[in-house]
Image (tube, rainbow, N blue to C red):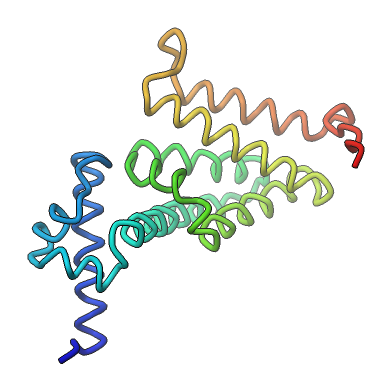
Length: 194
């Protein structure tokens, strides 16, 4: 007999919560189906039936990370100054990476399969960039800001920033430089030939 829908949803939530705890506490390598099932007080078969196995679990963790990011970015929306709002939205990525490094890594790894959530995060950034740089340049600026955030934060998390530089300062310098460049005519490269 199949579980009622609310019990199935409750088990999926418990599995995801258990996986998130393991991810945040012990890192990505510790997130095994056996460990998640054990922490949730169920069997590994439940991970397959409720989340679709390891791939489904990783996608669910990435989506959970995007929800955490959305919450951080929502706080930035209250800022009346569009440039400061854009900076705060970008800083939300760093807050997520520092508070939930495992989720940040999973989000980077699973972006192709969690497209809807990734696109929503990107569109929030485009909208904020459009208020600063104008909609004509918004998508380009948002892509550059997103790439900068991902790159600096992955380096920071892996200890790869050269010379012991502070990731927050590297990110802040890059963000301000990109935003200032968005107002320059030199920031508008010629279209590449088809």
